[in-house]
Image (cartoon, rainbow, N blue to C red; front, side, top):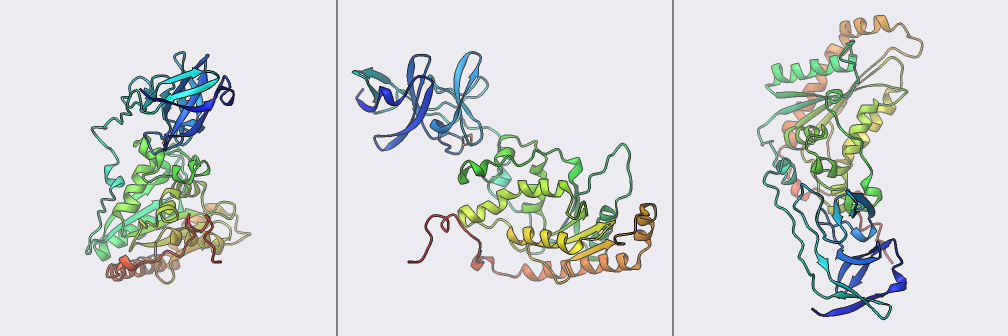
Length: 370
Ligand code: FES
């Protein structure tokens, strides 16, 4: 085994670790419990830099946790914790004359376990369920109701009407997602660590397919031709569940930023916004901004809204008036009509020439004209 110097010992004090360039590759060096060890630096999950990770103790042994999504490796053996077969490559290390010497070749190779069953394989490979002739209409209800004490929701009521019209009058396949029924984690902001740490499928979903957003990704990205999203107005904004979902959809938007890859093509979005008091234009503006940013298109007049105004606090009358409103009946029907019409037309569009005039990672890396 040939060894070469990588650092002076003084550059790696006890209780420290760091990534270093070594013979055309990057390794992670560790100095803990009086021992110096070395592993391959690129995490076997998505390539996070292990030398920038965090030391964690598992059953008395030191492990390095990847800074991107937390995969762990024993800093001596390279092995993942019990129950996982993955193993990071290890290098032999010697200390001579105050210098750290590392074997030029790994002592043990990296092993990335094949997972027999990939529960998000359809997302990973973008197995779209739409066809040129499909009309799949997805409703997303973002209101937060307590199932123990159900109460009427105007936004969800109108959404149900919209799906019913899509089905009976336009022959659509329909599906309803109620965000409150899907248990899902908040976006944990992996992007802030490194742009490549925000992955598709979302790293949370990738590591835990039972997370409720898996269903949203599947239905919104792979299945739907038309999406109707309904939200109440809460303090002048869309519902908090809406924003929770949207933050987890960073993974869709970041594919454009990072890889010029548009996941949403030829899909239509329209909105139902209802509130006791007004701020409709602001809420719809926010919804439009986000949905166009991930690739949806809108028909003319792409929202239906309801508000009785600032002083109408008699909420006990609100639902009844809403249900009896001629405006709501007519406008929901027209919203569905416009959305279905547009869906049929945009299916003819050639998306191979689609441009994304959005900032990309290249723009932030000196992408300036001289
Ligand atoms: S890249 Fe290391 S845990 Fe995801």
